[in-house]
Image 1 (cartoon, rainbow, N blue to C red):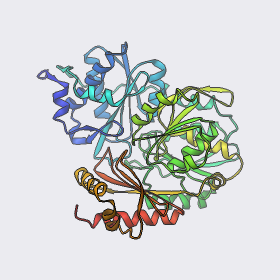
Image 2: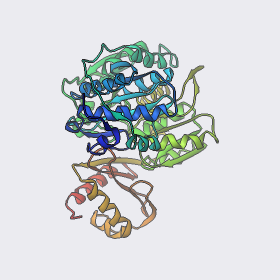
Image 3: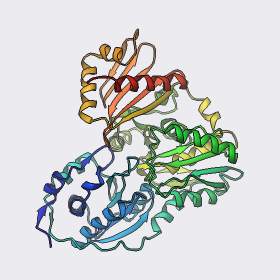
Image 4: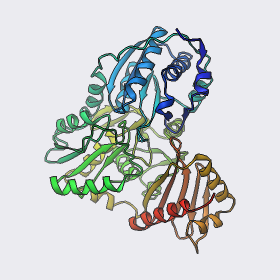
Length: 477
């Protein structure tokens, strides 16, 4: 028995905060009491709008995830809820299954952030929680009174099977016949699932880079070593594509036939085109090729983070029947039911890694994936980050730059240019008179400063990111 405490008080003192995708913090802060408090607060908020007698929980491959899940399960059972435990699966597999069951769900994952951190993603019976839900969780008056933590139950395979069957019904069983697909497995939560799916769609699958240690892959800032490995793997195994994801399997990486990874927003743009999407919601950081391609009837720009993309779906549904969203990290959000190859694909308003990859492979057919990219407008993006960069330092940099943008540009090493458009939707995004774009913002999930740029060539975009981040590291803010 523990001393009765309000969940809000425990959460407030935990050091764990909501970011752009769930609650994140140091593993050392996710003690059993804190995990249980978050679970109870979430259940309390869900019970205000939904009726349910069970919930679902799954985890990623982080070493800390099983203990966090055990505490969440204990909290749910303490108030009489049954729990469907699915073990290590991709986040979208948990989401699509719990939505079909009309029950809430918790995914224990820190996504791409380092293994000394972890997090919780929360799902309503109808999809991701909103920012209003986050605030309600933080102020919940639910009370933690007792916690009997036991070993995790045997994981059910139902969510994995549901997720695989979702795409087997919408794509032909010979879609990938004759294709050699590499799966960069690392420590992804879906690494044991992807090979099954791709093989059932006809591909010859080669497993690559499996790791017993957690590897924090960030699909929005792919490391040079991962880029190099992909090219080497393609040459060694003669691959048509390499597929991978981040840690919890909701952000994709897909390479072309040379081993070159597609940018996440380019992957999303091509996927949306193949799926005949009419209305798009995308964050302000995504490539301007989306509008320049003139493929979509409506494009709405949002703050960065899936909750903001999802919130825009309500407005898009007033304008279009086939709507979706994606982020610069490649996560694809299906905002409406659509027909794909004469099969109904139900809405999945949360990031998904499989749908955009399969859509682009289907769009390419027997041709190289690179041919699809060549048909897009010549607007190239690059991004990277400074890790362990305090948030208050990022905010100070952005505030100073918003007040005196020309001074900031000079400090970044960008002389003889002027700002023609100024956007503070999320961070500081400046369009310059030479057509280039510079966008700076603090990460919502970790102490990092992110930089996104657009230029007229990939080399120039990468050079620009390096120049800007090097100069920021040498600045006194």
